[in-house]
Length: 68
Image 1 (cartoon, rainbow, N blue to C red):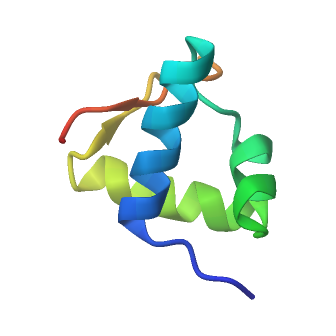
Image 2 (image 1 turned 60 degrees about the horizontal axis):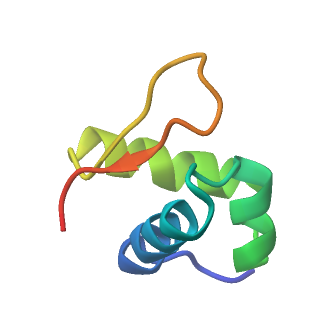
């Protein structure tokens, strides 16, 4: 299975938000990287714990990159 690297995931979220005005869904992110949704969720939890992204619980497409 393909690995998702933090810098690639952050760049994808930034680019998607810039192009569309809202964050990608977990399913869209998983599809873009060729991985499962659970893999994306795992990486996003790690990024959130590290303070690199913020998400609002219960709000779809609320992911925001907070570090450049």
